[in-house]
Length: 340
Image (cartoon, rainbow, N blue to C red):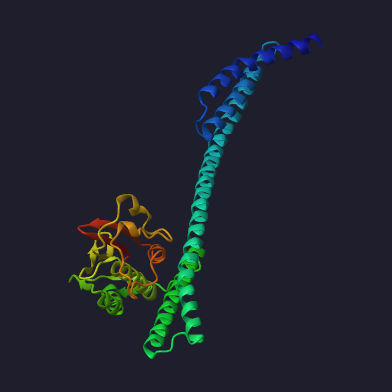
């Protein structure tokens, strides 16, 4: 019994020789990565076991050969344990980083959803209230002269078109966010898509007094889905027209460089504050105070807030990039796409 107690005491002393410095090192390494702490834990464990075995072996009359073999086995086991600890630590660190990023992304998405609900509620409440008032006036016979009745019918149709556009944008954005967007990728002449988008936006631009211009150049053929690409160009044009004052101009240019095909839409909006530039493509971001105020006409569209978010989603679905910068008295939206 006395020999067993002596072995216990010797083993504890040997373990303490390693464990105490290990605890001190751990105190100094607080705040370091998970990998460092796991490797330190395994190193202290292996070295403590090795120190205990060596200390006990001195009183067990183990032959030099057996002790040598035992040390080799412990060394190999310790090396494998440290290698596994290093690998496991890196895996845990990557998973922890991914979890933090996922939580942060979820928080941003939740905040974006709340902003979107508030924005949509606001943008639907106003036209619905106006349409209801006009419909009640027509139904009750409050308005009887032909010109006013015609104007009320026209206003109801205009507001209906705006809400239909808003619903369409919401549906498209939900497809993008849900990953349900299915693109039919093919080779698309970018110049033809831009021409179609310009022809569609021309009546809106004329009604507001905005000139649409194109810079002559070599339009590339890009890898894209034509309907979605047409929507990207159309959304950028409508956004540019909406924020460009009367007698201003919107310019579309394009070309090809070492990074692929590109096109740009440049407006005369007055510029965006630098702090707001990273948020331009966020859902429901408008930045009205930073840009030229819109006129009160009927051709301002649905009011922005979703159009640029849809642009970013569609461009990224094409494995492209979209960015905005301030140039001169306006903004330049640049889209890059892979070429065919």
